[in-house]
Image (cartoon, rainbow, N blue to C red; front, side, top):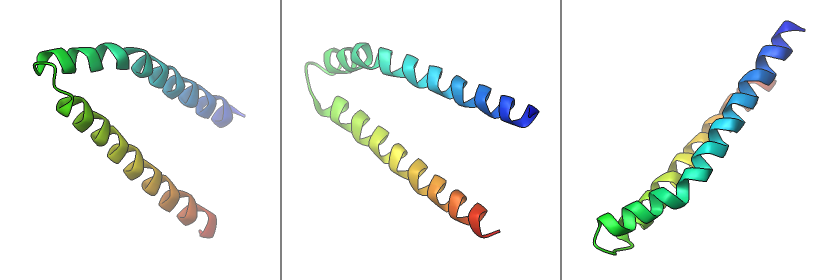
Amino acid sequence: MRCAVEQRTAVEGRFQTAGLAGTLAPAATTWLFTSAGNSWTPVALAFAGMALLSAVCLVAQGRRESRGASG
């Protein structure tokens, strides 16, 4: 039972962190846009980087789950 509680707490912590990051995204986007002289290029690169990071995490999670299921 203890492991389930610890796992739930870890998931809740990640969820809260993601919520905070999502809340800061508009401010970060505005800052990137204005600091680059009203250019959308840094904003686009930042979002492309986040998408790439998400894809890498999804692939890593898929490999981890498939390895756990067979072994």
